[in-house]
Length: 352
Length: 258
Ligand SMILES: Nc1ncnc2c1ncn2[C@@H]1O[C@H](COP(=O)(O)OP(=O)(O)O)[C@@H](O)[C@H]1O
Ligand SMILES: [Mg+2]
Image 1 (tube, each protein chain N blue to C red):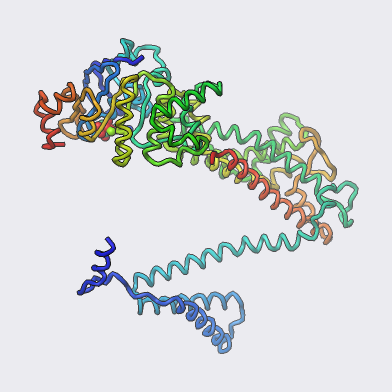
Image 2: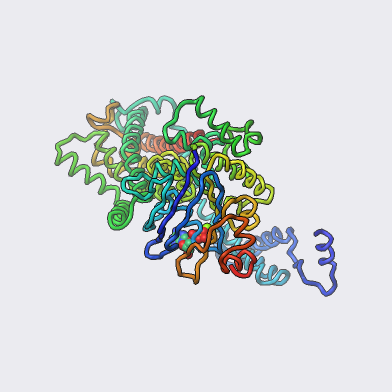
């Protein structure tokens, strides 16, 4: 094998198996050239914006690289390099907003978040007072998310199982259609629905539970869709292997199919949790908000982090706006912690 | 414990498509029967009708009778789940459960059907792994994932899993086609050993394999693509390979067609 390869490479007549490549050092040089050319342009022409500087330098780099690559390596490799560079640029553009949001929330919220902030409510604190905290909102959010997940996850899993494992024909298509419709439902409509049909028509009081109901409506389509995709990915071989052992269909689903799809399902659930954890509009109409601590989601109004952010950020005093940033940072960290915890649990459930 | 199988008037459909038509044959207890024939002639289809796995696919259905020791698998009120406990199956591609350890894979059939007793499960796991000639290779890592084994080991794990539920009949659909020659030999040895306790039916594309392991060989074919497959002849393996009755069979095993 190795001798024949060597013989081929040495063969006269040349198959041109080895193409010419640009040396690595060329690319930083092109980059430096592009920046230098842009600086020159800055001196000569009245360009002022920094964004323009970056765009012009980027475009010049792309042109320079393409010309050099065509000259040395041919057009196929030049196209490859050009597209690769564009992909990196697009990636950078996509990451900028994410990093910018995180950075500004951390820089504005970090100084406000401390133990006192996390363990005190807004009871007897006026908008102008510097103290106060988010304890009541944190409790509210945790309880509402937990309740909504408790309602939405089992229900959505059953729907997904029906759609993938049992559903055939018209019923399944109809359910699928309604799940799609639900996916596009504006969140305020979910809140209005609970307000109209639970609070007003059934004469209930606004409570954390009413908020959880609205969040449930928003979670269901996300969990159904993602669980459905994950269940479809489970190879049919595994189902057949289980049937062939004389295991019934339902046990096969519970003991073989679901565990195999579990990591993906957990991800989907966490996406849904992350989505509803930041919902404001439906809570506005269902939990009403309060400044005091209310541990009981089934009676009396509750607060929630997004609602707290909304009400604090709407006030003119800097102390209130600082509280809003602190709550925003807490909400982001909370969602990330929940996510990490869920992944850890899913990982522990796996055999190694 | 092993069981005889009598098939009569068996026709299997995928939706409107008739895959095999009017099959008749009998299989003796504690024998190895090989199904051979060109691709698409319905060997897998017939095999899967023997434990009611055919109907797992949507719109697939079966006509005719399959008697297991005289009892019709397709009779009224027969529960396919019970049929599959009596007739186990090993698939072409090894398919251990990826979320389970080696141990849990072997006892999956028992556990999923409600056996809890640890001592019984332990005993059956060792027995089945020994039966599948895999015990020595895995006894120190029973808690590791089954998917971490080599292809040949995985296939033997699947055989161990199938025999752990103590079926009467073992169906194998090209169990060696994804394996290297050494693993293939290991499985063939295993089949010869298992014959003393089970009735075995094996689909194979490898004629030497059919000649080596089987007592009886059934040759299937189809006349044209789109036509249903049919059973051409079934006889003692030596006879099929030395002096078959039908011309089609001879042409196939001498490599003149298919
Ligand atoms: N799931 C299926 N759906 C529709 N047709 C199928 C399916 N499986 C097999 N068939 C058809 O049934 C015929 C027999 O297939 P099969 O039993 O797999 O043949 P073999 O195992 O002998 O190669 C073929 O024509 C094949 O295309
Ligand atoms: Mg086949």
